[in-house]
Image 1 (tube, rainbow, N blue to C red):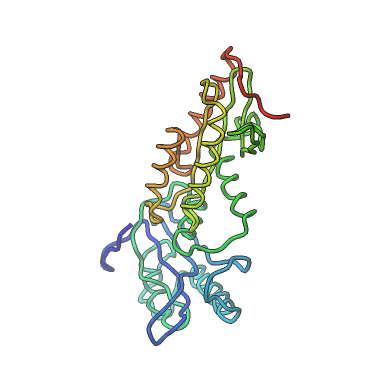
Image 2: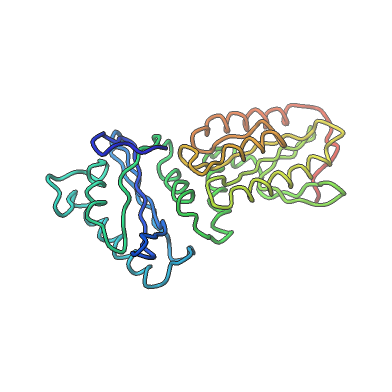
Length: 290
């Protein structure tokens, strides 16, 4: 991502919403993002929820955020901001430039910046939010998010065929529960997901690699194990996740795909791996635990 001058049209853009923590030294904490696409006539907002935690975010500041959220949405619905020279739609960078110019107190909005177009706007704005705001979220919410992304990438037919949460053997006769899998006489398919857009991206990637390597060790004497990994990324790699994705490829499998912009590739590989297991006659050396 990169900034461009205010005089240029930003077709695909975003702005960061901040709450001031110290007006004397201009300190602030990012608490939300706004993104838009002029060509698609779309805009979206993602602001920190009440059940998400951020440093310096007191109840008083949360109340200010709620007020700002409502006010911004009113401006967006009307297509007008106070002191704006002429009405603009909220999928125009001029609209958000005007909002930025008027929000100069406790809640502020950065000037618009350019970004790549979003292939899955609702999902991509969530990844943008995670990469910039880095909220502390409950683990259940994180699991549901990546699980939903994998479901959408697989499609209904494959999702119904591939089982959730099956137990397989790992190094030292240990047991590991995997997110999704398919077991046939010919072998085992493991499908896992990881969120590389969040503030815990490195920790998530390392944990996934460690777990899958321990599973692979139990299959080291044969070729009956296949792995497919889907990941959520920040738009334009804003979270610096490229090296983490490359690490998974290096250590585990080359079948690693972005669940937003490489959804069709993910589904195609999943389909081919399922068909391979269903049609092969090779015996499974390490069956899943009952």
